[in-house]
Length: 133
Image 1 (cartoon, one colour):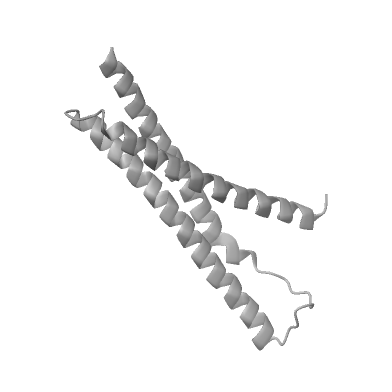
Image 2 (spheres, one colour):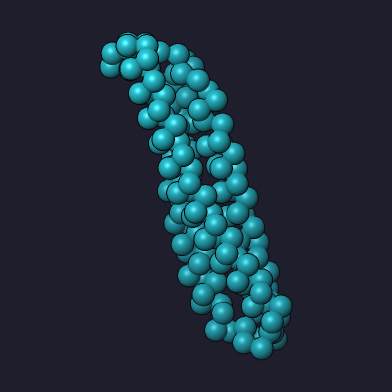
């Protein structure tokens, strides 16, 4: 496998994760909102539910921030290569891996927030089941 193919694979997979994580976060917000109607009078469970919703909202914000920051960084790099070094569209340039560092950090933050949100929702669900019996 060529290095170029490996890079293309991780770019596709990370893009797929972003789409899937947005869908999961929005679903988590809806589930959390739905659970709220059953937790009236159970402050601890309502707090966990609200924290789950907040985690999902922050995950979506981290996703937007990742896309915004990486778009600007890659545009700046493109502009730098084109203007400063007089590169044409077809010229080979060596890309700096440091351009993606903040993106990978936010990628990990998004995963952590999504995981935290669903762990909190699972805790709420277990509390709901216990309350029913």
